[in-house]
Length: 396
Ligand code: HEM
Picture 1 (cartoon, rainbow, N blue to C red):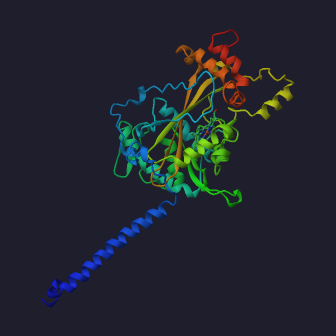
Picture 2 (picture 1 turned 45 degrees about the vertical axis):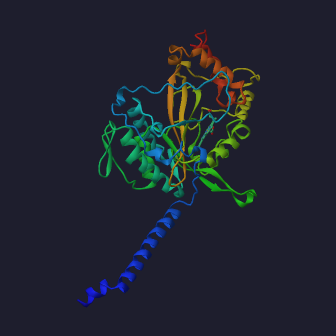
Picture 3 (picture 1 turned 135 degrees about the vertical axis):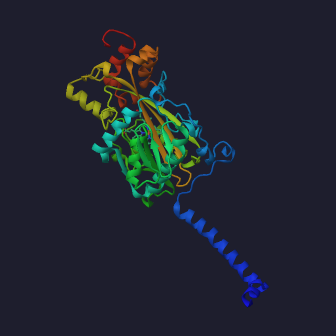
């Protein structure tokens, strides 16, 4: 009775009210400080005029492809080549719907990816521990939101797993480790993923600020580079072999990366011709001026003579990457992703694009970076591929 009276007294009500306010204050403070430690990276807010266009909510606005029939879905036909090659960023905005593209090559690709992950593990998968929160963030998003919503005929959500109906496997919704998360992404999605973080410039640079560096990847289909050799490198150093990058792209790329708001997703495509159809190519698809000089000296060739190399033009393919870039809203990391397409040259001729591609090959040395002709090894395959595309003698 005494207790009941005390509980109803104004003094008790005052004390308990104060306690409730203190508890609420502590909860809010903990949330704020947790979110600060979770991500020490400041995520650029969308510029005022872009705020309505790019919102992090767009990552959740995924339209299901209810009738999607994987076995009959043709690969996209991407034809990004132009008469002259101009090195530009060449990006366009896309909706979150279009982050991942799937087609009937899926199962064959996935089997190859699994094989590569098992046999070339450190070539295709590597990371620094600092990237763990970003990998977990993207893994969780793809498995719990994007894939089951976008491709319900392929991925179905269960209480603790995502079921892949095509490979008949259950994928854990919580990644057991960062390595496992990267492996699972690589084994279930025919897309390569690279994670970048802003890294403070060293005091020795004499400058303030940060630059984006590669901190983790699952990349089964590199086109002529060893991804592991790019780990920890800045965008400029990653692109060191690309002629014209420093003069034509570096500044705009650095600005773009620094300002990219979460919610804005962009796509770009590159193209090249390769003399074989190896999807996993750690070398061979590019050439440097030094390498060309050495080859010519070694073979006793004149400057403008065609480089000789044994290959069958019928084995050549047009290789295209559909690349996407976007920022993860929580950790602020940038994800660079690409899906690789290969088209036999005969298909390009059959669809009536033979002359357009032949012109684009001629245009490699006529744009703003003539060095692209050597970098893309046009000096090796150019003449024979053009003759094939134009149906001329000597191109068979
Ligand atoms: C808008 C963003 C980007 C642009 C405009 C761009 C542009 C280019 C271009 C023009 C090439 C030459 C390839 C060719 O056409 O044959 C290239 C190569 C390459 N890019 Fe990018 N790139 C971008 C983002 C990235 C990112 C984020 C990464 C990795 C984290 C990356 C990794 C590479 C690599 C590894 C190569 C091959 C370099 C070599 O030959 O060793 N790129 N990039």
